Image (cartoon, rainbow, N blue to C red; front, side):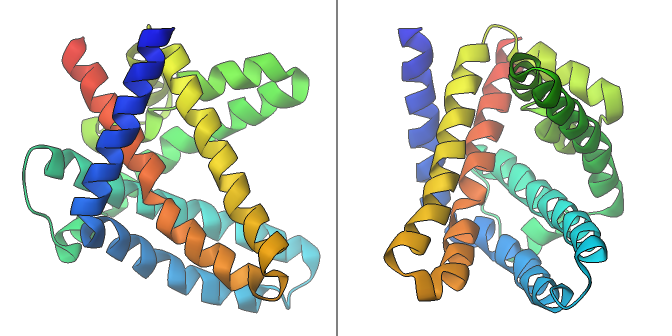
Length: 218
């Protein structure tokens, strides 16, 4: 277990270094995706609760898929020493890639949610098993159950490491929401959105590094 913790720390450090060195390539596309989303989100608040929730969920899932496609692809490229610009990072997003991503992530999210609702442990197990489904969809072109099976295969033997990282990212996300509400309640919404955007690429970078190392070790 100590080795897993050390490996997790190494991934976190490597991910932070990549993010810092290639900040514009990672953050630029994410900002260009999410800023229009936040504008639309503000308009949707005028709708009745039911339709507003449906639209927010749909557009939020799409924005997450677009950002995931860009960050995952960029991570794989810069890890090989390539220099990637914002245009190239955005160019990694295509209808096919996003379709495969949604085909992998939506079933994974359904199973994770169902597992947590029925009994917490199965949901956490699915969360770990399918943690690399997005990376598989973007970099291997798999989707649906093929992507989920491949993710489970890559996670095998690394489950605790994945679990540590996911719990850490969940806690950090919670802090990014809680801190603005506590310290600057008047500016909590815009500040939370900015902090969320800045943080969003980091977990994707770290998990993509984990995926790449796992693939190399198979």
